[in-house]
Length: 179
Image 1 (tube, rainbow, N blue to C red):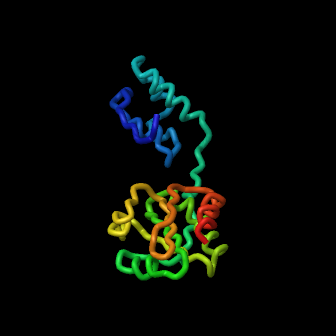
Image 2: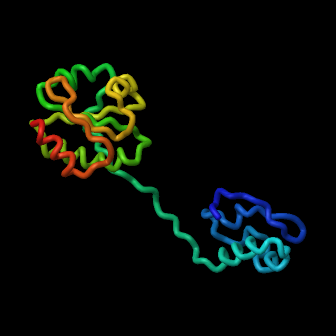
Image 3: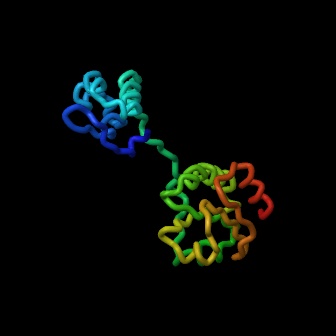
């Protein structure tokens, strides 16, 4: 059972919430008012509940891992709806535009690859990012339906598009065709 499932279990003298028995934050049978005694008093209809309580008592305490942290390079230039014309379309260098959003997991996964590309092609390629949540006009104008979407612009024209979290080799080969 998941920790989000809540039901009432019959126990002598009342009921107890199953959320207490499966809570990943507490991992303690003490919430069940007497663990083994309470289990003995469960009715025969609650076989699954007794089985779950037994498993919960005998399982090792759960260790909570820290949240995942993804590296997102902050020094890549952010481009807005207003600055897209001057920074991307009027640029003398080819431009790689990373269309992304802060809530997008694959966008965070591809961010280090885009940062490596920016370092590798410094002086030959301009790399910018566009937050699609904050800049919906540009995203709509270029038909962005999935993110991350990486577009290559050369002389003001879109010349290639790569959609999804791709390996560095895939992105490099797409860029080399247009340099």
